[in-house]
Image (cartoon, rainbow, N blue to C red; front, side, top):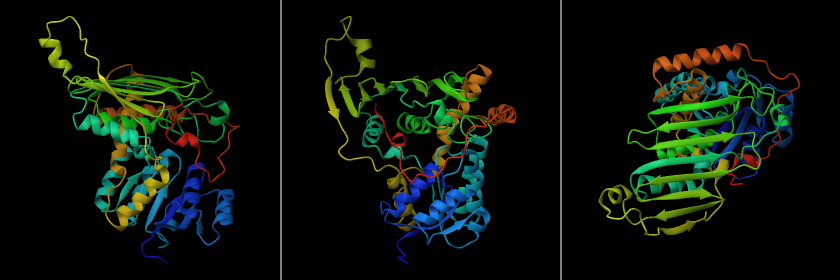
Length: 396
């Protein structure tokens, strides 16, 4: 056994877990050795046996944790299981990489983060779109002052189109009891994470989340969020799984210019002056200066899921930085929980979520989950071992 390889177990071998497994087996994650897998479904374990006959197979999660066969786990189960499984793994002394979202409830994720802190182990989350070069450049331009004082972010991300057949492809999809939410928790977590990673966390949020607008589901398939920031900036976020063709356009405005990401191109409009100052000092009614426009495209493909997993292994083996620390998953979930609470109660929600609002959200979600009805025609997804294009950055 190569001591430089991280001994990893994958928990959950549905679409995503099986794709991670095949990334490892195909050599895309050279510093990881797959030593075990865990799932309750025989067909998924049979898939693992066919593809990796020497890898240990478990149906009992606790037995996996105590087996000594792994030093880290990758959690690729339905959302509700992420926090309790991560907590159990930390308590067993293991490192954890979890799929997004971090969980369903901020209250659960707070406990998960506390367990990570107590354990001293490495904790990562699969925010693979942070590896996108253009998103990294947008973040740098906001944070290094290139755009000046941040004023507005608008993200129209409506290219998450899904059919009813998609929601029937998994027995946990489209319900409060199985999924805990809709487009904000399943498709758009990457975008909510990138929004706060690039632009920061707002101080308040108002949302309209429409459940079952386009599909026969209990959860929201359209969401419109409006956010306010401490410095007076605002953000708007529009997403849905019911529009085709969709749009992916991110516009970020500062007082010295703006950037627009669309179609795989980042366009930087540089004013060369401060609009905040020009408004107050100019002796003309408008501005006749044309901004300088510079275009950027990615110089290499995104490192995506394999890159996040490789960096997770490197963080354990050599101490190199993670793409996304698992504790950061609470930020995206805070936005989603606040959006649901705002929509359900018709009010503006202050951020970060207070203990009272977190408890209120938990109670309202529990009511919906108790009345939840999963689609009897749906079935749990079978492993494919393939990375779907829809899981990566998609501009059209």
